[in-house]
Length: 50
Image (cartoon, rainbow, N blue to C red):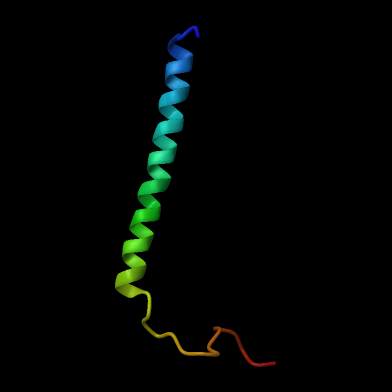
């Protein structure tokens, strides 16, 4: 396979995007463990009754 600058830049871009979303996912999971169960009551959905 011919590897020029465009192919290398494309592969680098894909790896950076995947790394970004993995990092965001890890952050969300850690934050959910710390703050996940605060102010949660059964039946409380956050909208007005009909």
